[in-house]
Length: 211
Image 1 (cartoon, one colour):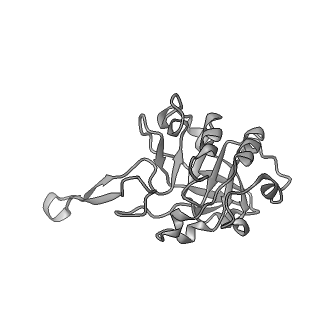
Image 2: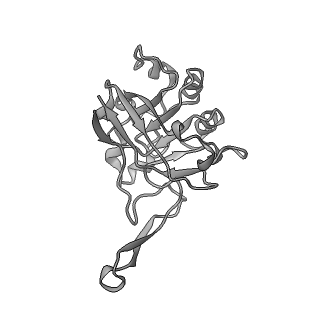
């Protein structure tokens, strides 16, 4: 098994979704003075590569600590939809052309759009990418476990796809990277969050074990 890192770097001042506070990571203790090194970190719970929980959009939705740990990992099915990037959200008829014969139930669907190469540039948050509501409903019918994308959001404002998926406790993994390495390959995805009590999301160290 080969480990594939799917996580963007997280650093002080790293790009944050419009309207969210910018991450600040700064020295707190110094070896020369305190005898040890420690940093203080300030950031939103949806900073960088992260997972969205039902509480993100649902008043009574589950928060991070209430979700079973096994929900953050599972069999991955990665699709290269980069040819559609820049045309708006992916429609069902378009998405179905990429489907393979693998069983989708219980899988974590990963969408390689190629947007991760724009991380750090204005276009990263400006391009309209993601999936349509009809694709989201199709994935609900297929009883998938989660869906991930290498863009900052699975859909643009007003974020109806978020509501559709999270209402069925289908987790959303955003701002992933290196997803192309999983296309057409058997792999297991891991996107485990910090156990942040009461939070609607968490930064994650996403990776996959690829056969």
